[in-house]
Image (cartoon, rainbow, N blue to C red; front, side):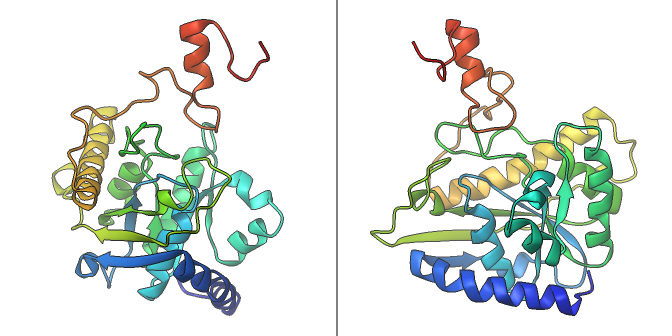
Length: 261
């Protein structure tokens, strides 16, 4: 989308603060830059393994002179300091698990239609997979792609989880880690364009996105991913929140791990 002076200043201030920190914390290896669309709006779909992922991915895009814009939880816009920063840089609020989610996705189209890059975490939250593989995807990215015709570009990264493990409050500064980030070719959804957006079509598009993303993660990790993608619903886990194991503990044992014995 066209950059206002306010947005440019906000990005410059954030970059001036965060880039030195990220360079101190992490070495970086960025690959696949030739796969980034340069003359059209697109949807970038990264994997999600730690809470600093948006900074890692944002650092990459900003260095490519692509202003990163995210679908971000609407509640974050109410957080002091963070909320004004999100608004100043024209991030896109999205309501999760509410009737407002559809309207939020429609608002996100303005970024794409204006030729910008919209970063959408297709899993919707930090992966629940115990080994941090991409889990079952949600259909938001696929819906946006089929609505707008925008390319969907998978963006895999690995290494940041060693600095700040999932849901941890402790940052591991030493030894200095390396984060590898690899951009894959756009996911081919051409045969699904123009079709009614039924559950079958959306699920098919989502699986293609998740397959492409998982394949990139496997390359970075030099490991074989699980044959079946982790599904929180099947595993009895909550869809969102830090206490996602609580539901499974209650259903399996009749106890809440957060309650005193």
